[in-house]
Length: 121
Image (cartoon, rainbow, N blue to C red; front, side, top):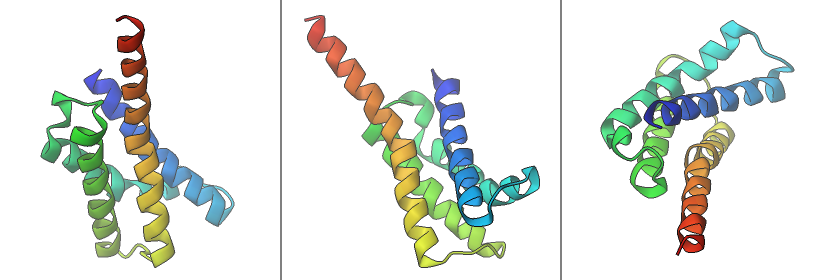
């Protein structure tokens, strides 16, 4: 579950970058995708380390919120430091999209687990 959770988070970050590229540039290349995604992927790794995410990878509050916060803030700071755009609209979209992606799947898992507990007594 731990590796799968990390891979899921990484795929979410890559999907965020890919969709943004398609929406704003009409397509994407591997080089462009790497350029957009790497600051957020690097920050994601830091978020996992800082939050000790491997201890409870699917917990929305205990793990999801810190991973999301570090990924957004760290990704935006790295992006700004390397000359990437940080327009307010991008900051808002990145913040909300990554919240939905990084915390959202954890909420779904928590809901499924709660429903199973209720069903099983």
